Image (cartoon, rainbow over all chains, first blue to last red; front, top):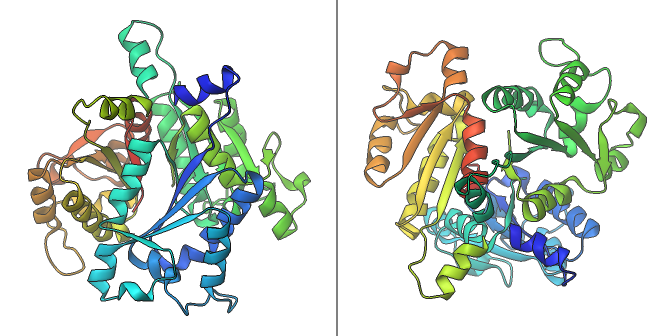
Length: 131
Length: 131
Length: 131
């Protein structure tokens, strides 16, 4: 991470923080989305990618409701407006027989969610948060 | 992480390892504190910061007991003596109506716990552990 | 992570991605192993280390069965053939009175699993995934 520190010390523009949120169970989705809203409120420049696999993708499907009865889709669209990217695991879609058309708009798909989580950290220096 | 490796190879003092522990549920607090004691026993030079949000802050409140009936405060004070920093999420305090005075001494407060977890990793190279 | 990006940009061989999987509860072992198979199918060059502590080591003991009734040992041996390393926490072995001989072959032992998880990230740049 030395390059980030160096650029700040040199007075150059500070690179925005990058964070990957790993969602892998349905029960943690509402908590994770609340975490992300708080995260962006504290630092609106943060680049956030949500990678979901297993039960973690449920909230990305249209017509799903959060524990308060609100559509998750509204929360996703709102966070997309704030720059958050949402990524679903294709192994999960295939394994659970979920048609990609059921995903909320602009949710992208990768072959394996965990591989994307590793790649974002290792190649692009993303921090990791598991809600 | 190349700078850390390089400094070791050059024979300079090796930088102590930095780790952020992310506590976000009450049920994992006793496990997490045991993890940290084992961590410091294996490498006493490790710099550890515990960032708690959601149910993860419960153990940081005075008068809370662990599953064995021991006050969590004693465990916190002991670990603070060994250099561990404890940080609570202000969004959690506000959202749950918890007065900051209820926190054990020397627990610091940040606006958003998750933002601090991302910042410590991305800006300062901390490793991440979720108990 | 700047060194990895630079080497790719210079046309040098791209360094394989390194990821540590942290297993700390018995209930997540089958999910974690499935994650790792998907991970390697998406990128067979990935260097993966599984570090287990607490209940996370149960699947590493001989004669343990997964929820489908298959021996975990077969899954471990298969993944070892694909380059995955398995590491158990000695504090857990001692605390739970488990003889090291009960571990599946070629599972190595470290003093504290969490210390190894921190070390792999901080010193060697491993990404982190908690199944």
